[in-house]
Image (cartoon, rainbow, N blue to C red; front, side):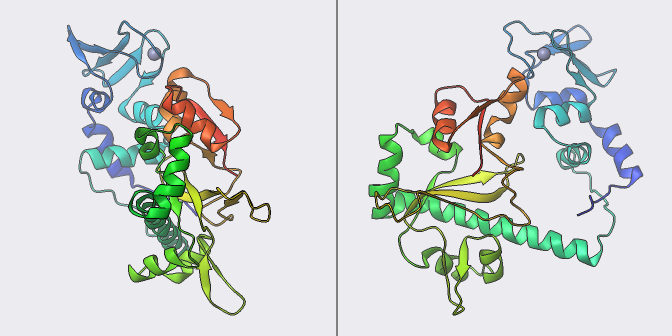
Length: 291
Ligand SMILES: [Zn+2]
């Protein structure tokens, strides 16, 4: 899919409007120091502030690690966004309407499909999360497992952990009732269509780990069974789709991104639970491969 293009005039308006002090202040506590502002650098660990912001020049700069730049540069680095995404971020912040080039029919169809699939995944994530606390199986099997592994509420919330119920089509029915399309349920791999045309849930009786893109969109799930039955696959993952490619996603990257930037390194671990446990213990620049 081609990137939607923001017209030149709007780009200039965003650049003219974005105030470096306001943009940085959303992430860094700034104090006035003469004509400038100063705060703790968000890109490296430090105890004494060396991150300086100049409203007059419209730039920020860290005198220790050298990072900084314009509001666009700052957002690109801090939020790990591309140029256009950073511009859109600033447009949202300043309520500037973004004019984008018309998409072709094919582009529009693909964008609709991607949004539809991500919407279904978002619904499924919330469904799995509420199963974990609001159903007896969720509590006795799923929640009990996370507790036994020492996972606390903070980490469960941060990683949006959940539980898929044992029934044949619990998710399918819940999603259909809410009007989610069968096509997207099948295309995301949350559900499977049998040869006879019936649709059933892929994930049954499993603790659920949503997989997020770097910007926080749910593109897939990993599900682990807690049964000891050897005929049941221990892990089931979402299949590849137009929104999910295993080689492109790292588990935990969304939650880890600011710590990775700050530490300028990233630790790759084996499994989902390793990522979650390490975040919980305060080491947040950790990811795992996603399946
Ligand atoms: Zn720095």
